[in-house]
Figure (cartoon, rainbow, N blue to C red):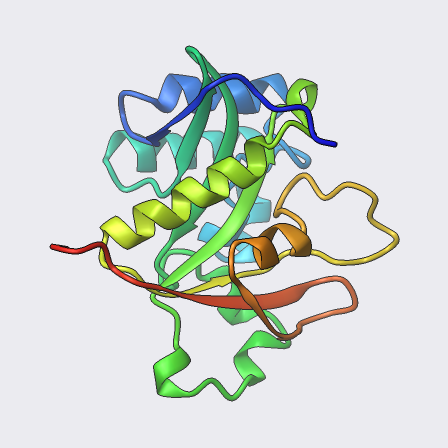
Length: 199
């Protein structure tokens, strides 16, 4: 059974919260080989050219200009989790993959949003932080008008703990449906989020 965290709050990544994002990612050496959650925001050649420090600066520039996309989760004042989401034109790397561009997606299923990454502080995992952050991201999408949301969790017995994009089970619990497998381990899931009343 997951140990429940203390009361969690979330804040969008912004000029004011960039130091919290930076602290969380610096603690984990930029996460995933110094990605700084930039991989899905640019071309792979640009990503490789930047290097870890360049990626940190790239994401910092987005945050300080108010163009960053995502929520930071907090226990008290401590940043403990992260969910990156945004429009497809922002999280554009998927459109350059081998499989996704070949899918026959009907006009009514074309996404308005994508969720690319879920990450939790390594000292606070298995405490429900990721599912809480995902839930809050979907609530924020509803506040922004809702629409079709795509996500790309990994699902493989070879992966004991997926700490970068969330588990397939986590998305299914939030009402997503499996569309197809994009690779041996990556699953495309989809959910239609209704807008909040008045949005």
